[in-house]
Image 1 (cartoon, protein in one colour):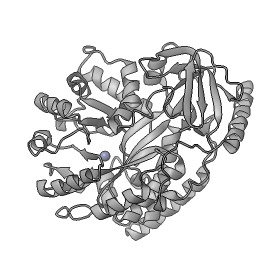
Image 2 (cartoon, rainbow, N blue to C red):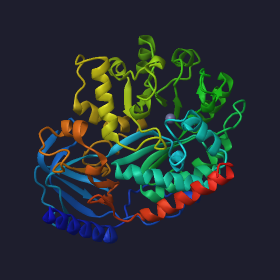
Image 3 (cartoon, helix red, strand yellow):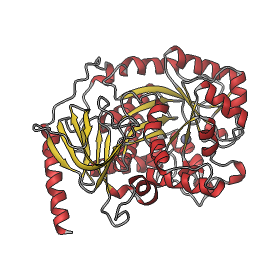
Length: 480
Ligand SMILES: [Zn+2]
C-alpha cells in the first residue's frame, strides 16, 4: 500500500510538472471575441504524453479495445492508439492497472443549481428541487451563476466528465450567460451552454433573442471547446408550471430565433408526451434534444427516429419518480433506433456519478424488461461516452479514443478494493466502479486531475466562494 502511495505521489509530481511546462494548443481556429477572448485562469497547459500499459476501451468500432496498450497525446489531440507506441519526447503516464477510456459526456446538467445543495431536501416537498430552485433562482447575480457552475464542474471533473451540456434555465441577463460560459472555460470543460429564460420569468413573452445573439457574437467561434444552443420552456405540457410552459406561438418565436442563429434546441418532456403535437407543428428536427423519456408511444418513437431527435435520460433523478407517471423507456428507444444519451440533470439532490447512472439503467432494464432484448455493459458505456457526443453533434472531435480527435480521456483504477480483481472492463465500470476510482481526467489534452487530485484547480477556493454565495442567497431570498 505504501509503495502504491509513493508511486502515486511521484506520478502527481510529474503530472504537475507537465502541466506547468505544457504548451498552449493551437487548433488553427478563429479566436473568440468580446468576453470570450480573455484567457482562462489557472489551467494546466497541453503537452505531449503517452499513457502506457492501460486496458484501453476506445469506443471506436474500427479500432477496438486493447487489454494492454498505449495512447499518445500531443497538443491536445490523440496522435495514436496501439499496443505499443514509441514516443521518445513524450512524458510517460504509467497506467498499469487502469482502464483508459473516453471521458463521460453529460448531455443535460443545470449547473446553476449546484449552489443549492445545502437547501434542497428529498424528504420535504416544500424544499424539494423545484420550489427551491424557483425561489432562489430569482435572486441570482452573474457572480452566483459563475460560482455555481465552477462548483458543479469541479464535481463533474472528479466524476470523469469531460463534456457537459450546461442546461442554463436561469439566464436572467446576457451577463448571467457570459458568467456561465466563463466558468466553463475557466474550468477547462468542453461543452455547450443552452441559453434559457429566467426562473419566475413571464411565459407569455419570448426569450431574450437579442441577448442570445450578443452572446453568440462574443463567444463564437472559439477554440472548439464551447458551443451554444437554447433550452426551451415546455411546449404543450402544463403539468409543472415551475418548468415554464409556453404556447405554440411563443415556441415558434423562440425556436425560430435559435434556428435563425444556427443554434440547437433542448427541452424537457416530463408530463404527457408532447411529441405528436410538436410533430404536427413541424417543430422537430435533428437539432432538437428532448430530456426525460417517459411516456412516448411507438408511433412517437418512429417520429423521433425519422426526425433525428435525440433523448437524454437522467436515471438518478428519474428513478425517484413514481412509476405511475411513466418509466424510463430506454429499451423502447434503443429498439426504435432513437439516439439516446445520459445526463446527471443536477447535483443539488444527489452526487454526480455516471457509473451509478449506468447501473440504474441496467437495473431498471432488468426490472422492467428482463434479459431480452439484452442490454450489454458495453452499450451502457457507449451511451455515457460516444452517444453523448453524437447527441451534442460533436462526435467529430470527442466521444472515442480515435486518432485525430481531441484528447478527452479518463483513467479508472481497477486495483481498488471495490473493483479488483478485474475481469471484463465494461462489466467492472457498470457493476463495480465509483467516482473515487477515477485517477486521471484529461480534457482537450489538459491533465485536470491526476492521482485523484486536481492538478491546478484550487478546490478550497471554489468551495469557499460557493459557500459565501449560498449564504448571501439565503439572506436575499429571506431564508437566512
Ligand atoms: Zn433537467
